[in-house]
Image 1 (tube, rainbow, N blue to C red):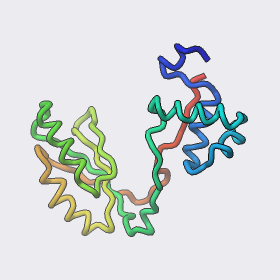
Image 2 (cartoon, rainbow, N blue to C red; image 1 turned 135 degrees about the vertical axis):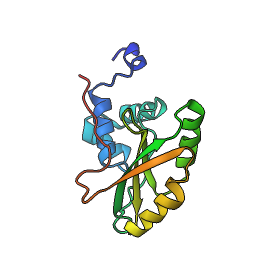
Image 3 (cartoon, helix red, strand yellow; image 1 turned 180 degrees about the vertical axis):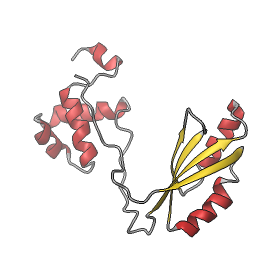
Image 4 (tube, one colour; image 1 turned 120 degrees about the horizontal axis):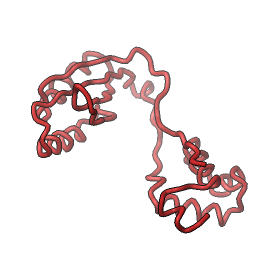
Length: 163
């Protein structure tokens, strides 16, 4: 791999295999990772550290079971703001990050401004979160709620080949 390949963010097959393996099991030891991808331990560890340093790997965390934690009510919320100038967007962004029940927040190009994924214990808890927290966020003009009936796939762990 050339030095320029990393400047443009390209990953070779070994790098891609490392990312894929770690996305499936982030607790894997370097020894096990090296064996799985077909490298010896030292080159694998060097690549692993480089992938972290270059930001391909942002960190490691436990994946919690929302059902065990009684947080299996999921609702998606469209949020339309009353003002979309930069200061209003920043104010909303800063405030929504503080709402613990909001799992995800995405700015959307479309008929509304944000799409939130909200996780609560049940519909009545969601109603309180919507009324007391989401609707009172800066510049919120209106919301529309779409409760999820079943989660089929959740989480992002896909490494796509660039080759």
